[in-house]
Length: 413
Image (cartoon, rainbow, N blue to C red):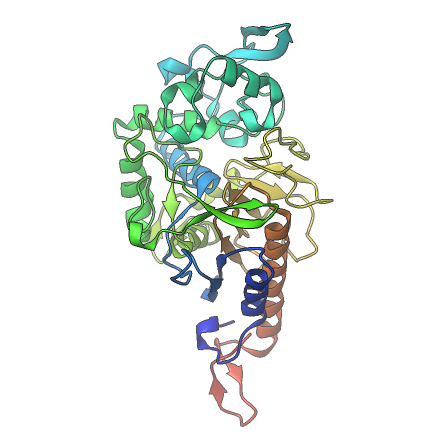
């Protein structure tokens, strides 16, 4: 497979993205994909700000795609012996040592009790620690409102450490703010702020110059849009420039190019172009299932998210880095592919080192999350990426497609 930039005619993926803009699914979007040999597609449609086109270096809020990056930073510390996966994290982060369980309300009084089990690093990474999100739990949303806890976007420590659990640690899957606790633990263990740790141990080694908790270049920032009955409407959005605490669960800005680089490291087994970020064995163990079945996540805040079920009919669980499918998907995603997304409808997938090691991203900036039209676009883009790869592999073994005249020429999709 070769990049779309080498093609003179629109590719199937180009047409998918352009059609999405024409139909009002997005104002603009950018997709990139790679296999073990390098980038196989890079293209976009529409505009990032009503004027400039989307590019592979456009800056976007990647929201919960932050989680997978921070999880890799935590794995690095596990490799070093600085913390164990089953070590109680509360002993590392003093502000989190009281972990009450949320058992609903008696009238106006929340039923809170001490947790029976410790909150561990494994539980936080796999979302089995009992930590939740208010937009997915009505009792937790009520607790946050009653106790005036700031939203997760405000960068306040109290949001994470004063939020009660929504389940017993180790008792089941609850998608939530667990990675924010992981970020606190990383900072305490290393003695450096999380942003410095990520920059020195992941971003700089991989050349991810666009990624950080503060946008690298405001001039390349994509506008945020909200889906309304009248269509997409631009809305002001920016995370605090100097927060009390950066959100390890959703605070990063980044570009499609940078995130695909991160994913290529994952699909390559932890080492990309001679740079090792995490050991292959540790990464392989982390990508295994570490939770029970993950069902449909019902949203109680439609302004934040639709109900979340990104692969209907496909059983999914959670690894230590993100969601994984337990059956092969209709678009050809192998069992165990790592995948997840960000709250502004950016998505990714990353295969293991087998099955071609295909990885891809689809970036846009639209709220609320889990927009059905955008997830449909993601499925179509991934299907096209995988179909093009299968077709290309039939005809080339050196990156070129035979021409009718017997010479070689750049391939197109």
